[in-house]
Length: 331
Image (cartoon, rainbow, N blue to C red; front, side):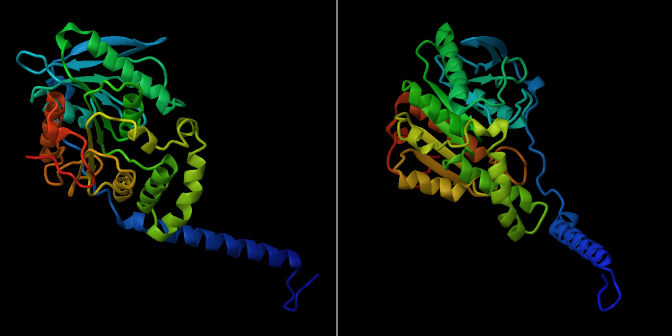
């Protein structure tokens, strides 16, 4: 069959397919146009190297898993407060500048640090893939039990410092073990997983396309990510019920420029649910709460962290859980 111009139906179909394909290619090119002109504006985080530390290699068990880590002692005579670090998402390495920067400042200010190897990373057995927050919280509890078993820390106050996703795991652990002296959430969201993931997908996609396109595509991709093995174990997680059960002094620290975490929504979730504690936004910090000029973890945050831990360890009223919002640690 031919059209009025003498073209066969088959030829017209082929032309329509070609035109549609060209439109898809053109739209894809337009969508990626920002990536052609935008470079990576985030400089690598600067900080101490692992080789500059002295530490003790340690091992401890969580049921049938053997976990490992590094124990850092401050100078002087104890007892010292002890901070147990909880890692963020994904694979963790001992030479992470972020973890080591926090460790160095705490160690240099009279606070011992246990930096465990995340399960399935470095010298720890198991796998973090498919592990839910309940399971990962038991790793933090096993690390704390190990600290309590050490004679050097008899009479020491022990707390948790959750970094990024570790800020989700920390309240799960503390809600199970109320004897912790303090708990810190550094760049940890307080909104449910699905909302946090949607926010992060919009940010990630915006690096490669126009923001309005990212907002259209992110709901689709985030739903698929929630089904992936490394996410589905905590796809329905909401941290607020756990924070409501935490009685220990709490410190929520956010970077004002953190595009990975829903900072304003996280603060609002704390206010709406009357979650008490210290909360501070460091205006120029990103996810690592880094100083934009030195590209190191911001000194004002590190100083606030030290002050909070010492005050909480002494039972100071200024570190107690009073009304939100927007408490700022003293100087």
